[in-house]
Image 1 (cartoon, rainbow, N blue to C red):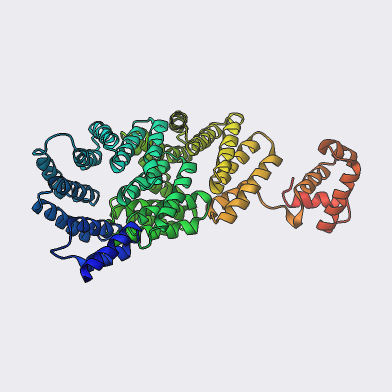
Image 2 (image 1 turned 45 degrees about the vertical axis):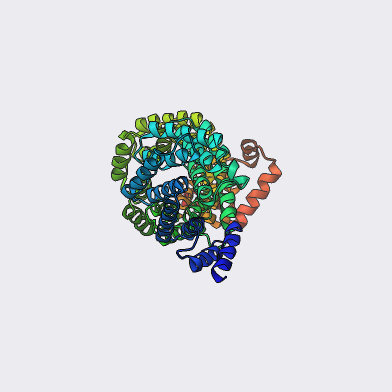
Length: 541
């Protein structure tokens, strides 16, 4: 009775998605008499709790039990699941063996069955990993067809997910995002199994980040966080969930919190025995540490990313630029731009490439890259990428000595970033707006933009940008003089009378007299002549 009670308790916990309780009860009940379906449940809970080896062992036992019972189709399902998990864990050869075994077993099965679609899933994934996208797309369409004909929510979600991602990489971004949203329908209704649901959630958020659709990424990251939180003890998918939370925190300017999330992601990936994806977390972490001015820590993060097998470019080139190694940064982005990339990964490179090329005085190259980015952004239709394109275009035009053309681009970038609630990017756009206004002779408006940028960078803890803003703002007026008082003092020093000053500044003579009185008090001088001497002595004129 003890084993039967354990199994009953385990099945109830499994249905309630109480994975720790289900795993403990199933582990205690496993034995020769345990039904094959319960070994499958044990394998599922082991996977969700980050116990990869336990998953493999339990699923192999489920497979063997089904084979011994003559339950061929059930055994095929186990083999297909083993192949999928082993592929995602980097064990391609073993995964291929299980997929081949499943196909061989199906050769003896008459008629069309849903398991034929299930076996196609690891084969499709193998083609994706090999970057054989045309064949992977064909298989995705077949899997979607099986899912619809057999009303299999897992197959439908899997096929739509891969088809959507592949459409993104071929440049059909709106269509791809629509398919990814459709893949989530079965998850929202609870029809998709936990492993497929977690995979689809993470894939969708990753795709949104890749195409810079930050609004959609924030919505689905919140949904993923809630989904994870509703399953006590869940470990699988929590690493990627932490990465995506960190990405949204970085967008919102919560830099220190973002670093903590990226570090948590690495810990979760290593805990599940799948450390390779931790490279992206360290790449993202390096970018945030660079903004915070912690350049040695940023370099260490990028080095960790490389050790995990992840290429941290163009973030690493941006770090070199921050360290004054402009030639190295230029060489890196030129090499990256020359390499063939799909439109999505090209869009991830172009904004940094433009910034580095402008900094390296390669304005013609930056112009070409910014025009390409504008074209890609229009094709994708994603707000974040459009903001990057306007920023890049304005940066290039300003560097080319065309501030009047740059200003509307930069103002549009500032507005787009404000709508996305991205304070750091908004402040960066303000910095360039201020530069354009100053180049156009509107110094007062320029100082207002630069001052707002400086304050934002100070609050965000971005020292390099704060210092640049302060430099562009110029030195603070001595003795607490306001901007208007400095303007009045300059005109006094030039020999203007109060009526003349009033006419130049569009003020009343009474207001000019009040400003002059304040100037005398702040400078502790008795006359206009003494005030003028102070202005000349302190470089105000």
